Length: 143
Length: 44
Image (cartoon, rainbow over all chains, first blue to last red; front, top):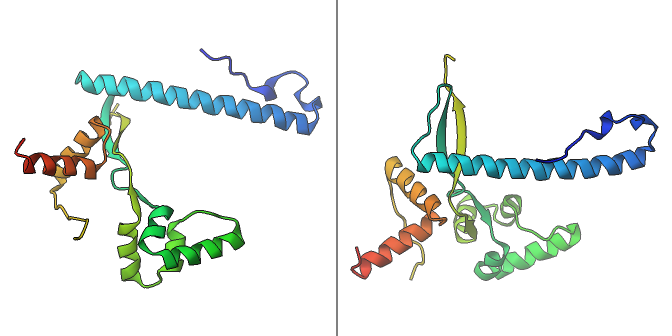
């Protein structure tokens, strides 16, 4: 159990200096986010156990499992340095001006405006992520 | 030698591959690579 409370409901909330209220709310938000993470982990673990036991159906709900991230790919800046050092140098120079040391799909558009070459480079410098199950509880229709 | 190979799978095969990969905390490529290696070594 957590001891989450809503700080804006406490007595005298409006009398606190705005900056202090902001600090309190920031701390509150961190707690809420941590609690969300915890509950999501609990939820996923219960769904995993349900699937393992092949007990995935109730009167109102059924469990669906989808698999995500297996196909999602993001560019890898280190691979770009290996595969195309000249493009890497251009990117590095450009990003130094912007203070943005990373590689995105937008950068690839900029680096490889030829569509075919861009697709090829995406393949070469992409990172494959682990396939992860997504558990979705679906409410049955007509209930 | 080209480092990449292309594997064509049916939607059902892909779903089974994803399920296996997720159950073993692997990527799709790792599963395929292990399967190919096992076949080459005569383990399956």
